[in-house]
Amino acid sequence: MVEESFQNNFFDTEYLKADLKGRSVRGGAVTMAAQGARFFLQMGSTVVLARLLTPQDFGLIAMVTVVTGFVAMFKDMGLSMATVQRAEINHAQISTLFWINVVLSLCVMLVVAALAPAIAWFYGEPRLTWITLALAGAFIFGGLTIQHQALLRRQMRFRSLAVIGIIGMLAGIVAAIIAAWYGAGYWALVIKQFAGTIAGTIAVWVVCGWRPGLPVRHSGVRKMLAFGGNLTGFNVINYAAAQIDRVLIGRYIGAGPVGLYHKAYNLLLLPLRQLNAPVTAVAIPALSRIADDPQRYRKAYFKMLNYIVMLAVPGVAFLIATSDWIVRLVLGPQWDESARIFAILGFAALLMPIGNTTGWLYVTQGRTRDMLHWGFIDGVIKILSVVIGLFWGITGVAFGVTIRCYVFAPLCIWFCCRKGPVRSRYFLPTFLYAGVLSISVLTIISMFRRFSGMSDPVAGVTISFAATIGIVLIILWFLPEGRSILKVIANFVFIKMKEFICRG
Image (cartoon, rainbow, N blue to C red):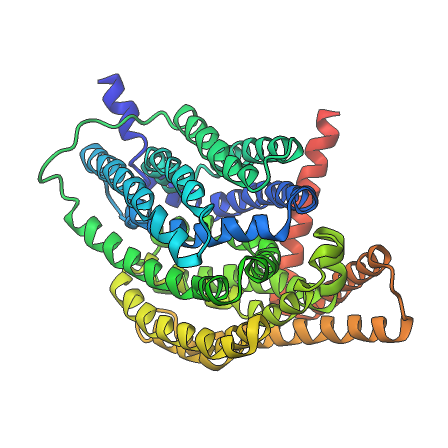
């Protein structure tokens, strides 16, 4: 009975509603802090590994991860999100989903291994066979953690999730740097993924005390499978369309150019992911718990959306305006060619903080079928933009991706907001905030660069970053929503300083 009661503690969420706002704020703060640590770890590893390895090393891994990342989505099948979103679950259901995920992961591992010769043939690169076989082995570990992590998210245990993420990342980075230092070349990046996955798996099972039972027939998982199937369908289409640029560049131009393009894109998205990931981790369970209260739901959604926009958009504008300096500082002079790609894709990234959150609406409202339909439309548009841009090389591809974002962003918002409590007209203030912030940062930093004539990347980035912070603080002070953000930040800093002084 004690064991059964302990297991059931992972499924009940009714008690969370009593302090949902407080848990969301605290969870967001913890997750943001952890994501900041992950950002600096990732950035530090990028700086080190970019100097120990070559663009071709990164290009080889990018060629394989495009395929492995696509196949990897089938090991989850959206079942983790189904566990988080569903109002009521039980031990039998989650145990059944656990074993489904394990079987799917094993199948994915075998499929990836079988595809190894085909991947090497497609790119005309024999080394990819063994890289693919090595990466395939890591998939089985991922399947062992999917439901455990979903239960932690459902319970809004963001501190535990943060610790797990940092442990896995740190293990992978340390292993990769040691391997690269001793001349492992591109194998260092393979080791990074393997070591991080194993360490993360061990940490999840230590932190989450839930243990699966045997699978149970007729346990009521059919609706959860349907929910997850539609979500996976969208993710598959979205991933395929998002990766088509790297696939075609690698196929028709080569490993060097795809390495430059891939690294520029990843470097650009790195800070965005550090912000989007923690907010999404909080937003999905929080919005799912209040999906039956339209007014509260709508207010909570736009509050979180505006927080993201007002923090992310100025950061992206700063990266665009200082793209050549950023690339030189972070990656080194051998990557200078990627600076132009970095800047072009940056304009697409200005809209990503808004577009990405439409997924929250689909998932928390249980509308994954609509999400799948949008995935088909958007996927075709993405692929066409890349194919057309390919005629002008990697620069043309970057322009194609960016133009598509601006032409079809309104369609994305309209399609998502046809149903539910959030309507497309409510997004107008958010787009105005984004426009004011981005134009202000781009204009002032561009003027500074033009009239100062500064060429030192370190000094230039430092001054530009300080100017960006100043611009954002001034603009936020004059915006009602902005003052709310400043108040939250000030309260968080005050609490942390008070805790630090008390401990001292």
